[in-house]
Image (tube, rainbow, N blue to C red; front, side, top):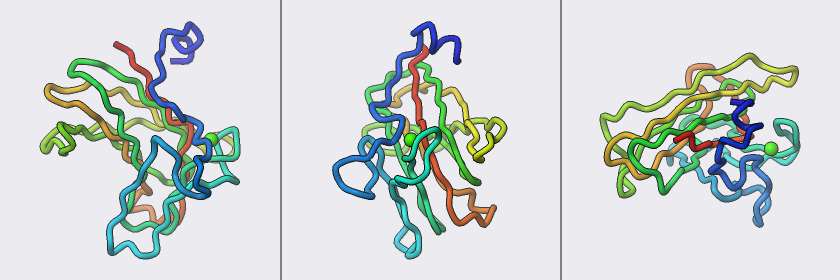
Amino acid sequence: MDALRRDGKLINRNSNPECRPGTIAGKLPPPYNFWKAKKDKEGKVFLDETTGHGDKTSITLKDCSNACALYAVKDIKPGEAYALEVAVKGRGTVHVSFQKDGNWMRGMQGVSPVFGEADAEGWRIARGMVVVPPNADCFVIKMAPDKFSGVSQVWFDDIHIYRLW
Ligand SMILES: [Ca+2]
């Protein structure tokens, strides 16, 4: 993927892959969003301006029992393929699910990216490929702590989506 990026053959779809701050301090900047269960009273999802993958900003989830950060990739067509890269620090998970007209497509196979080795600061790169199934018009990247790890905080950064074809 690095070679394709150098050659300019990858078209980045994300307007804010580095998670630069938005206009409201601490809130997730566009195009990011989050979901949190009502019973998850302790959990916090916010922009961390002290930690990042090569910079000082990332999305973090702290003390979350049932929450995830979200990035919806819209205006996609069936048959298109996308490469996905996310830097993850801590025991975080990355999943992709599809939508049609704003509704989740049930029974649709999600995509779980594969993680590389951790760097000196504990960041791992998750990489995956998404092929848009029939009828889907949006896919949503869900970033969350691994529920079974007991981890208290995870970070996500450098969220790249590249159109392959
Ligand atoms: Ca960053």
